Length: 213
Length: 164
Image (tube, rainbow over all chains, first blue to last red; front, side):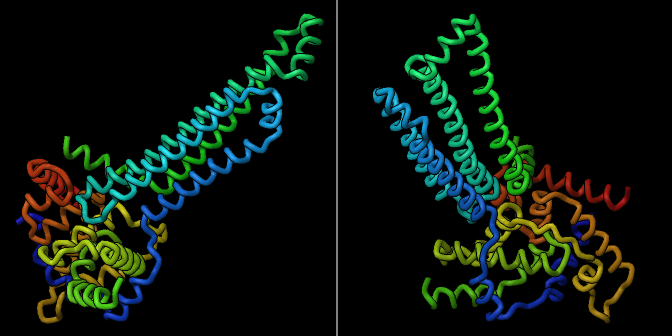
C-alpha cells in the first residue's frame, strides 16, 4: 500500500473534524467581498484604460498641441487622433470579450489560459499605446523642425555658428532620454503588478503546460 | 438573485460543505487561511450558481469551482501562523481507535502533501476523492495518459519527501 492509499483511508474520517458552518455563516459569506484575482485584474485593467484615455485628453489640451494647431497640419493630427481612438475601442472590445470568457466552471487549464489572455490584451494595449506615443512624438518633432518658426529661428542661429549638428544631437538625445525614462517607469510598474498578481498563476499554468506537452 | 435561489444554494452548500473543507485542507495550513479560502470558494460558487444545471450533481460542479478557486482565483494572504495546533485538530483520530504511531504517520503524510505544488495537490485531492483518471484529466484540461504519468510521479515524490 503506498502513501496516498494510507492517506485515502484517513481522508474520509478527516471530514468529521472539520468546522461546521451554519446556514447563517454561509449567508454571511455570500455578502462578503471577493478577493479573487479576476476582480483585481478587472480593476487594474479598467484603471489602465482610464489612465491612457486621461493621457490622451491631457495631451489634447497641452501647449504643444495648441502649437501644432497653429502650424495647420490637420491632415496629420486628425488621422492620428482617429487612430488613437480606434486603438482604445479595439482593445477595450477585445478585453471585454476575453473577460466574459472567464468562468470558474471551465477546466483548470482553460480558466488559466482565459485569464492570461485577458491580461495579455491589456498588455498589448499598453504596448500599442507606447508605440503610438513614440510614433506621434517622431511625427510632432519632424513637423516642428520643418515648420515651427521659433525652432527654425534657433536652428538658423546654430547653423550660422556652424553648430547645427550639435543642436540636432541635443534635441534628439533629450527626446530619447525622456522616452526611455517614461518606458522604464511603465515597465517597472508592470513588473510590480505581475509580481504581485500573476506570478503564481504563471507558475501553475507553466506546470500544467509541462504536463501536457 | 432571488431569495429562493439563495436559499437553495445555501442549503446545498451547507449539506455538502465537507467537500469545500477538504479542498481548503490541502491548500491552506492554518485556521484563518482555511476560513478565508472557504469564503472565497463560497463566493465563486454563488457567482456561478445561476449557470448550475440540475442535471449535474451539486458536488461534481462544486468541486470543480472549488479547485479552480484554490489554484487560480484565490489570492493567498502572506500571513504565516503556527500550524501545529491546527494540524493536530484535524488529524485527531477517535479515542477508541487512537494510535499514536498512526496519527504521527498521517501527520507526516499531510505535511508531505503540503510541500507539493498547486497542480500536484489538485491531482492528490481528486485521487483521494476517488475520481477516475478520465475525470481528473478533464478537470485539469490535460490528457488522461499525462494525468496517470503525473500521478505516479507524485507518488514517487511523496516517497522521497517521507524517506529522504
